[in-house]
Image (cartoon, rainbow, N blue to C red; front, top):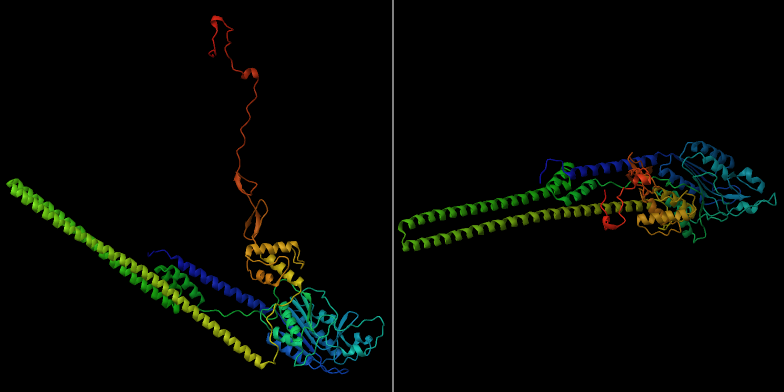
Amino acid sequence: MVGLILPAPLSQLHRLAVRVALAAALMLAAATNALADKRVALVLGVSNYQSVARLANPDNDAAAISDVFKRIGFDSVVLRQDLGVSEMRRAVRDFAAVAADSDMAVVYYAGHGIEVNGVNFLIPADARLQSDFDVEDETVPLDRILQAINPAKRLRLVILDACRDNPFAERMTRSVATRSMGRGLAKMEPATADTLIAFAAKAGAVAGDGDGAHSPFATALLNHLATPGLDLRLTLGRVRDEVMKSTARRQEPFVYGSLGGDTVALVPSVAPPVDPNAEARRDYEFVAQIGTREAWTSFLAVHGSGIYAASAHAALDKLDAAEKASEKADLLKRQAEQQARQKSEDVRKQIEEQAARQAEQARLQMSEQARRELEKERQRIADQAKRELDDARRQVAEARRQAEEAAVQVEQAKKQAALDAQQQIEAARREQEQRERERREQERREKEQQAALTPPAAPAPVVVPAMDPTDIARLLQAHLKRVGCDPGPPDGAWTAPSQKALDNFNRNAGTKFDVKVASLDALDAVRAKPDRVCPLVCARGQKVEGDRCVQIVCDGNEVLDAQGVCRRRPDPPPPKPKAVSRHESAPRTRARPSGGADSCGGTCEGD
């Protein structure tokens, strides 16, 4: 059982340790890259209007949103409240310089807004807007906000809680009869990629200011913006669902614009806590299944201390006891067999000697009585030898029985060692589950304490976030292409190539999603796959090499057949025989007689 070569379990344990270290390094690198993004925000709130009634919540909403951006680690958060038109334009201009080298730029505005001729404007605190002609002079166009954040590399986000019922529209005079002025804000599709505009209410609808400390839209934003690792589209979808529930579906937030296939989160994901004994527990479970001395020795070479090291030492002690019992039984068996052989040899010699003596006596006396006595003595010796041989056989059988009992004890010791190892594993699992429950309970208490310090808000419903079907289709197409199920270009159109790609994913991943629609469930399932799912299919004459197709090249004496396999080149056909004339090739035969006495009477013999 004991070898001089390094046992296989030790090398496997080392490979496990290397994989765990590599995974930890990759997680650390991903977290470092996420935290390296430069994130900037401009927060504007206008409550104290000089020409119309004051709004209750915009200043409170802006201050609370600003605190959220600061808490989640934005590099720059600028909060400005109750600005006039000149100050607001200057604030937007200054923020454009801050956003010039940023990765994520966010602008939040709470206050009045207006739409004129399909163009959206933000209304500062000193606006009077006596006529529609004053709009360009006394407001800030939304296009100026988009222009300010346009240099951001990964994300440009504008959040407008500006769809409140506008008192300016009722008092304004129209300078041009054909000039339109809508209720709420106008629909606006961004001209640049990776840009989102989130309205508190869909285009043409009015948002409520709220009866509490914040508007319904701001309350939902405060509940979901700081969720670590949550994609921004899902965040805004949850905000929409919460606002619709809190307003009895009277107000529906809406998002314009689109993002790519990667996850875009305002807050990086938080890595889960690492169990310090996880690697030792996995290795212990693996070694317990093997149960040999070499496996336990290899385990202790890697994990020399800890709760699993003590269990490994106990398992080794039980194996030692079982092996000693087996060795003792083998020794008893060998001794009994040796004794039996010796007794058999002694009896044989005794019989031969006695027979020789009796033969000599018989030869000398040659009497009938002597022969009878000799026969009786021979019979007595034979009976005695038989008894002694039977005793020796019984001793051998007893030795064998003891050896079998020892083997049973060894097997029971091995089973008990495996059972003890399994009990240790279960105990470690229960301890891990207890620690996990305590950790969740601690998180729950921290959330309750945090909730007690923040203003009461409606609980976040656990619902499926609503997204634009085109965005869902585009995301699903991008992730299907990543796992090898190519649906064509990710254009958001769910056509036959996309349905065929999802059907291919179902067959290879064992799922049963409806291929006729692009669903969030299918998106989550495809996104969760880290590696290729659909096999790579190569054209005739090509083969799979890694993650690409390469041309098959045969040796000089081989050719590629119709099935794409290199075969031995067929031998050339033999040369055709040279044509000869009929006269040269015809065999010569002897002429047959026409009859008479010289006739052959049948077939004549040849030359």
